[in-house]
Image (cartoon, rainbow, N blue to C red; front, side, top):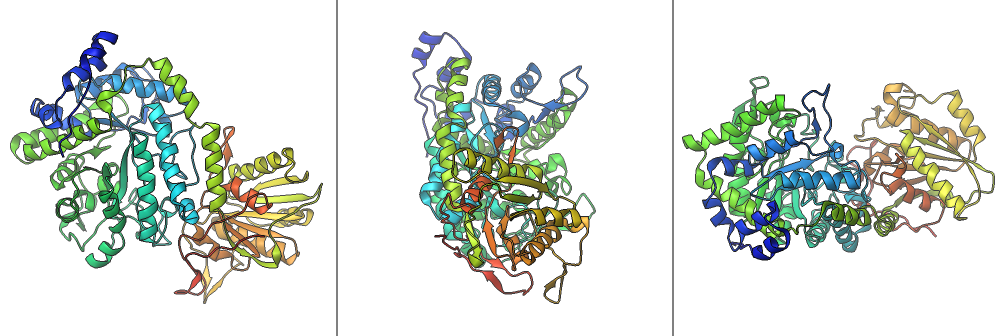
Length: 634
């Protein structure tokens, strides 16, 4: 579908003079993306297809690179020189609301002729970049609520905040079906192991974002959920048949296409069922199967032809080791474009003008490949037309010429506001899943002056518990109690820990086992292992066993992937919270732990049901807790 640009160019000129924005409006007035592309040079078109990051920057004369938080002429010159179509931001770039608004505004002003995509990974939950935004409980927590309303509201909140900051592309939502408990990179970033639930909640999140004028990107096509290798560090493979992949992994992407996703991000994952083409790895000379990001059979034959997708295809970061270690920098970008990619994300590291050559090498290699016919110019034209179509559709050409101070004032009202925080807490509380509650352990009802010892992997998680309890005391929701926080990262359970339990009336312990790997021998977890290297499982198990032997109330909180509750079958009370970020820098980094504490003390009603099945650790092949399991508290 060809999209036209309708802009009142003369009005803009009359009101604001010949500003850069007015020039963009006048140039694009009544023109289609196809017409704009026809007037562009090869160099300009190639630039639109490149989206680097400027996470850190070392200005000339500076000693080292630091977080790029303030616009400067050096970065601006690169955006203009290479006609860059977009920039991706990271946490280092978005420190606070005012700073982020001014940085984004400066980035956009550097793009003189074509408006700039400013992108970010603001998934909600454990992957959030904004340091002043509403972080939300995350996708798997939404899966536990089964609520389309919560998913849509999540998209709206994220979209509203990004739009207020000037950020116009979100690399979200994640549509990976997390059906591998040992997945090290997706986990709670996925809604569920059920493809129908992933589809439903993913589409609602997507719609919420789009309603707030933010372009969406579903990821990671064709699916990163059933992998046991993190593509940031290696090259995963999914060995399922075409039939199985179409039924499970591809189903959410099909729904997203039907509902109008703006972009699809590729996975650096091998899918031999769709493409078993072999390449020689530049890393070690070994034969490797071409990953989806570089596969024409996956991106063109499957995604474009079979699934009828005509939106933008963007790569996952090309500096990830799955690509960077096995393919040359320039070769990878050329292969990706020839496979059907429209935007090459982070194809080269650029942290100073001294490193400009890295970007120049990629850019010039693509331009040269077009001129030599190694990349067909009509393919470049199609890609840039898609890019400009989306920039028109999402209103980038129509941005009003509002003063930077007014943009800041508006952003300060929107980003992380009280209403958004209240909504995220409600969602997080609904998501809390009571997996087990023997001996009516929950809810706890401590008496005045009683003591609670809290063991958490990291101090910021314990601080979230302590801060929440203090707030509940000040709000007179619970009686005044003493809270002792003990982080246990790389620690052993010793006599000092036993003494703390002896002195306490209640014990809360957080678990943070990303991949279940306890020492299991003939179906029994070896609790005799008490070494710092085994802390993630051995410490909380030891705390559990000692506390329950002392006949004191013990509550186990799963802080990340819920699969880790299988390591604590003997625990009397178990909750899945789906989010490990705690309290630091004066704010809750996620609402999940706080929501769990409200449930533990009976101040919130949990509605969560497991969005994944929990396999047993000690009885392989058996399910310990089924999909949909969840206990209601009276």
